[in-house]
Length: 123
Image 1 (spheres, rainbow, N blue to C red):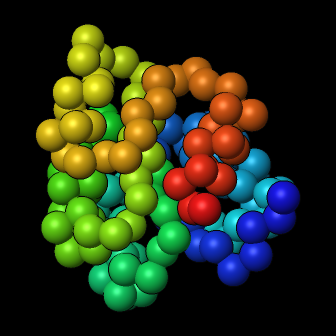
Image 2 (spheres, one colour):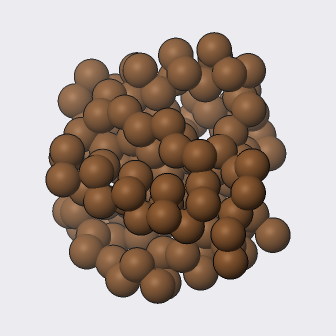
């Protein structure tokens, strides 16, 4: 299913992950704004007045963590769905719950599962 006019903000400090997710989502028809920095993601949210249909963010990043990004985004734009992705951590669900992420995905994840989660959140 092509997702027309759906804008997704993707944040991950791992360039390979960022590129893979961006290409995948663009192939599915999403408009993707991608950044490797949480502070930049927050600036982009402000510039767009929170006009994103979905935020996908890594949890562990330099400058500001994904937990920080999610907390600020959910405070300012409580209706924006958020997927937190993480490659490590004993209890990523607890971190994501604290930040109010809607879903936590542990890397590596299957792209088909990822796509189904996105569709569910956006429907």
